[in-house]
Length: 240
Image (tube, rainbow, N blue to C red):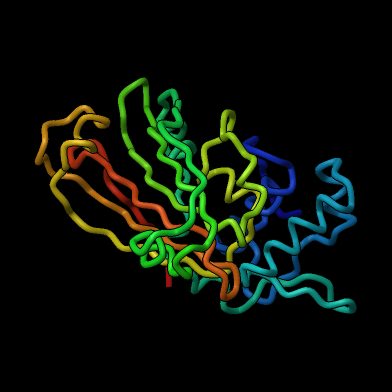
């Protein structure tokens, strides 16, 4: 039986999705290999059919599995060719390091997309968006400032979400399927507003990740993630 450990983070459907995805991306379920059936997953995790169906549907939307009424659910041959950097979860990253994770929402505003918002998110000007700024901490030390735009046509439930218990990036991973992601990684000097939040001097070197995701042709989110250059590194481990 394939080991599918849950990580305990967020809704059960999202935990099941991540457990199966990890098995596929690690090769424990090889390309063309059979994924446990809905009935098997229901028994294993004590989950409802709706919960398991949603997890498998999300995996299919992401291109990791194919579902067939006769053959069941199998890992796609293309699955292990996905981008080296999947979608990082800063909270999980901090916890894996043995530190205590916390976050605070610094600002949250519904607004029509201005010209710069539209360019970053790749939506028409005037589209309804949610702009959220979040500070992430490890052992109370700022490690990431997240400036995020969410396209409400792709994630309408975000309009009413306060993110009091779950940060925006994690909430999106748990609730909104994505089929394509883009990462740009760059170095930048910290402007005053960023330096003040990260507790570094103005002009200090920062590692910046810009991330976009889509669900089909529909843009979901754009995030600019600022890290103090001396406090963060990105690691990708993969095989051919």
